[in-house]
Image (cartoon, rainbow, N blue to C red; front, side):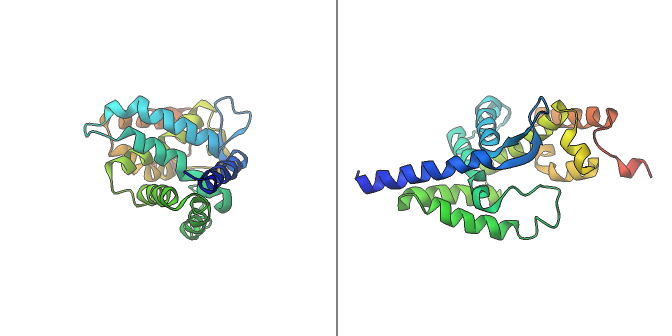
Length: 201
């Protein structure tokens, strides 16, 4: 261990403080303000160990927690891209890849490589841990949207079909979680938080 190594690690830790100022489109449960990336990542990490029991395959929960804590750090440079904004999503991958290289590159080489690979694993979505992390990442804002009286959905005129498409992984995940998700959608429709263009034409 060297002073130079510690300095790199501390520089990284200070740099990611900026995630506290990256605000997402999702409101907190009380609807008073939007959550930031640090709050989102913290909530996902807790969800990871609370909900791991619903996955039949053995999940490396620590790996999932690292993945969700590290994943949105790239938004420090790339910004938060609203999942239902088709235009902003066109260059999202390019912006985030560039940010990942810079931010994880602050760390000592082997640590930076580990965290970059975790970020890439999440993006590729091919492992059971990445799939679990993606389900959490998609389910979390759904829960908050219902709890905040559909505030963000209503602001963006979000349709049921958009939410279902975004949550295909959730629907194909553990049965209990899929049923919980569908229950949220049903309640949101009843309360008018989501549009339903398919059934209202």
